Image 1 (tube, rainbow, N blue to C red):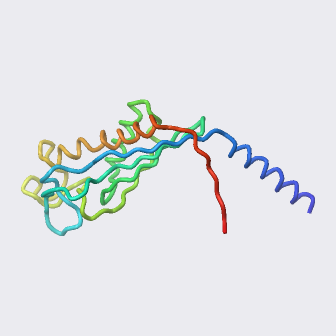
Image 2: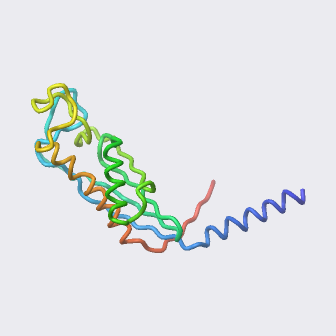
Image 3: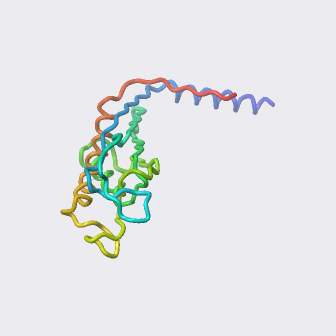
Length: 169
């Protein structure tokens, strides 16, 4: 019993010292709405964007405990292909915001947003595959890593001290 009590006291002391460390967070979002003509997800045939009802975004949250900085990013896209994630990580690292390996990217799986990777069969890619670099879809895909990295940079610039708490019920 005494050893269990001692263990609990030591664990609580360690936990409170961790929670007393200064913790900072910053959040930002950037618009990643595609131009007209970019292939849209959620269809079994090719359908290009014809307009915008609501913009779609890259939402970034940067967390910093004084030793480690990390970013969590959510995209209003159907998915996050590996090539996109690696390109964003390289862009963030190149900008010196934080290590690329400290960036986690997810997607909301929106079926009415652009396809962030290979396209369905189109005249430019009759067997499917990557779009032509000079096509509207290719240009959009080329611009996407920079726009997502910008949300991370903006969130890092807004880092401010926050308090962290938790509860169970």
